[in-house]
Image (cartoon, rainbow, N blue to C red; front, side, top):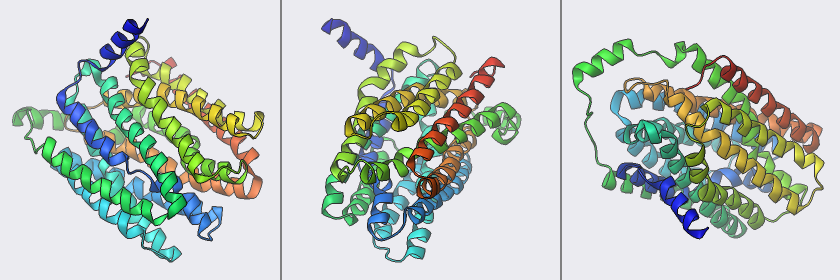
Length: 401
C-alpha cells in the first residue's frame, strides 16, 4: 500500500520540465508572503472602517486587477513574459510597503488601486510562462504544480500572517513586499531572458491568423461564467474571514490556520488528483462539478451549526471544489491559444477573475452588512450553481478544450 502510494506521487510529479519546477519555486517564495489580501478586510474593520468601506477597498483592488490583466496581457505579447514578470514583481514589492504606510482612506484606496494594477499585470505573464515551458500532454499538471506552489506559499503566508496580525498588522505589508522582491531576484537568476524559439516568419504567419480572445465567442462565454463563479468564490478572501471573526468569534491565528488548511490540502492532493483525472473526461466536465461543490460548501454554512468544526469542514469542501475546477479552467483557455495571442487570452482570463474581485467583495460585503450573513451564503451558493449551469451548457454544446 505504501509502495503504491509513493509510486502514485512519483508518477504525478514526473515528466515536468526543469523550467516549470524553477518557475514554481519562484512562485512559492512570492506567495509565502501573501499575507495582506486575506487580512485586508479585518485590518480595515479593526482600524475603524465599516465592513462596507472595507469591501469597497477590496473592490478597488479588483478594479485595478481588471486594468492590470488587460495591460499585462498586451505587454506580455509585446515584450515577452520574462520582462513583464520582472517589472511587475519589483513594482508590486515596493507598492506593498508603501500601502502599509497609508493612513487616510482616500490614500489607502489610491495606493490599493496602483498596487493591484501592477501586481495583477504579473498574472498573464506568469500564465504564459507556464504554457511556454510545459508540454501539451502535461499542461494541466504544469499549471497544478504552479498552483501547488501558490497554495503552499498561501499556507505558509496564512499561518505567519495570522501570527504577525496579532502583533502588528503593518508587518504584513513589509513581509509581502520583501517576498515580491526576493521572487524577482530568483526569477532573474534561474530563468534568464530568452529569445523566441519560433522562427520569425512563423511568428508573423501565426500573428496574422491568430484569433483575438475578444472575438472568440466560445471563450467569451467561458469568461462570463468564470466571472459569475469568481463572484462567489472570492468571498473566501473578503467576507468569510469577517464571518469567522464576528459570528464564530475565531481569533486571527485560527483564521490563518483555516487559510493554511486550504493551501495544504491543495499541496498534498491536487497533483495526484489531476494526474488521475487528466485526459479521462473533458475539462468542462470537471469544472462543472468543482463549481457545484464550492456552491454547496457556502450554503452549508447556513445549514450546519455555527461552530469552528463546521467552518473547517466547509473549508475542506471548498478546497475540493477548487481542485476540481481551477486546474482544468487553465487547460481550457490555453487550448484555444497560439504563441502569438497567448498573453491576451491569459490577460482576459485574469480580467475575468479581476472583475469578480470587484463585484464579489463589494456585493458580498454590502449584502452581509444590510441583509446578514445568512442571506449572503444562500446567495453565493445560488450564484455558483448558475455558473455551473453555464459550464454545463458549454460542455453539452461540444465546446470543450
